[in-house]
Length: 206
Image 1 (cartoon, rainbow, N blue to C red):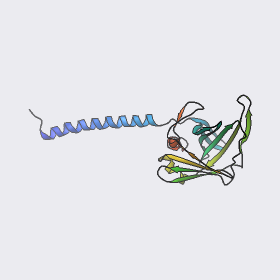
Image 2 (image 1 turned 30 degrees about the vertical axis):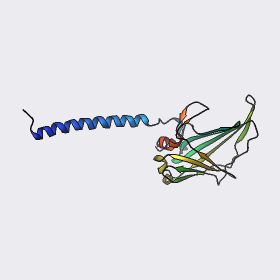
Image 3 (image 1 turned 90 degrees about the vertical axis):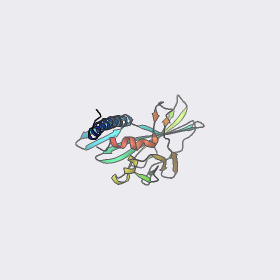
Image 4 (image 1 turned 60 degrees about the vertical axis):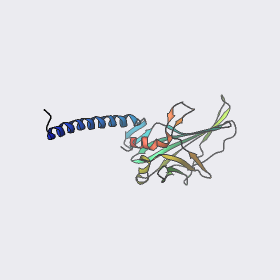
């Protein structure tokens, strides 16, 4: 005997419900697998407040004619103020010109959605430090600076990839195109510079 129409509809609805639950389960697991883990380098709470700093990620590498530039990012939260610690490492067998950060320094990010986000330098004037590597017979200049952004101007960074970075130094402006995927020559690991903020801003918001 064939089931009545309303009974068939009930059976079909149960099958659809099971398929929907299974689809949602697979989707949630896929999203969870795709999310980058929050790798915390420093997490301190004391009488002065709270400070959280993520481990460094390589954002940019350029090597040409014996000269190289590497840029590292570390997002941080300092008593609720969100910022970006930026370290620039230059290596060369020749003299390395100093690029300095001062009160007018900025980092500009061009997003895939067309918007531009800027971060303000929040430290003392610095030109970094220059050291000589006797073993490799080259010079190394290391410069670190902290840049901050407001709650209002980073929401787009959470959803739109960064395609281009411009750094305004004290006396120069230099552009750095960012890659979707970067396999570092330093540690042989693979990074996703364009999605850095999408992957890691969630790690310092709480």
